[in-house]
Image 1 (cartoon, rainbow, N blue to C red):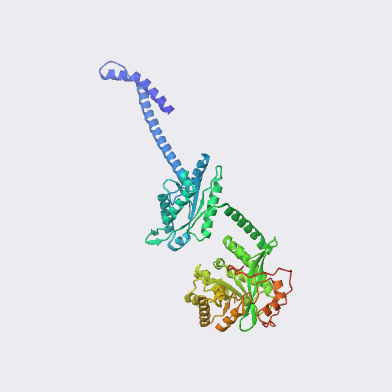
Image 2: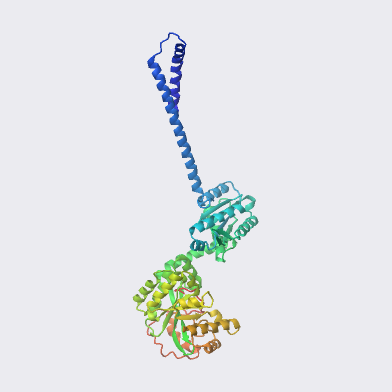
Length: 530
């Protein structure tokens, strides 16, 4: 602009001198035009035009740069797929409202089973579904800030009167209602629902991270309750999460230390009066001195990816123990559905068998019916590979899941286990009795052996004996106990079971250290550790 101003001044000076002479000459006056000054004037005009053109180009470039900067700013705080705010965007608004002391509440919502939509219909359908969810959120909360936090997780920030607890709950209910209508995408009808967590006790000076964390904690409580629910944050939830984190840290430290140990529950032939083997059940010898049941740690191990190292540790100890026992005794070990989707499971078990010298023919792996629903081709390949090693495969908790005759034929099971819930109630419940008889008849037609779980009385044993030949386990025969106590208690267990002959059992191992006997047997979440 300085150059342009200078050029204009020169133009004014030259033109004020030359223009009057040029005009006079045009009208016939005898005047002399200085050619040098005329040339300078023309050059000055050209210079003015050049500078003006350059300034226009620079102005347009500056406008483009400003637009790009604004676009970058928009992208930085907005989600590309849905057009909603993203986490930094809604965080900035939360910060602004906290600074001025405005009352706020946050609804954190996570879509239920969204992964199945991607898996079944593809990511394009998933993205369209996310956009539909965003549109419905905006329709319900047009005056409030909505954000996609990532994946299938969203948030709604309420302020003012809307942030009052009763109003926040009402808005959450409206959102849930809006999600009740199916989504139609590319001819596919998809159901959607969401688990929601509410944090409506935001105090002045609260940290933004704490607001997100507490609404997130409440949301996960809604998921744990089965999904499609709304849960309001309570301080006790935070304490539970901290306890969970501590347990997770203790588990990560305890697994390599061998704190998770095998307990053994005996399995008998109901008619043959013979001990046929043991089911391996995990216990946690916590450093505090407490013996922790698997119901308290198996779900956490599965959720945090620790189930495989935990179960392999317990397997290794159990194989080393049982290697010294009579070679007719079988070890039954539960495998988690999570582990069955590991394509290297067979190699890992083979490695442990080789390290301990335990025969594969004495190992029976138990899988639950729910495992068959995970990834059927992969599960079938894994089971087939394990059987090729000589390992037997048992279908556990039969009757509680979704197994069909087709699956029983497709999967090469070596044993079916009748769930304890049917055995426990079969004497008093005609439906349970009919189920037990049907399973026994089905197994007999497939020529597959049976084990009945949860036998607690001679009356139960006698009823099952009348149905057909099968093995059994339960409190009648003995509760799960450590190797050391097992060696000492075997004769007593035989007496409780009615004087069964155990002369063929030859345990030659020596106890390594004393252990407390377990007071009660609990059904274990089905995993190799359990």
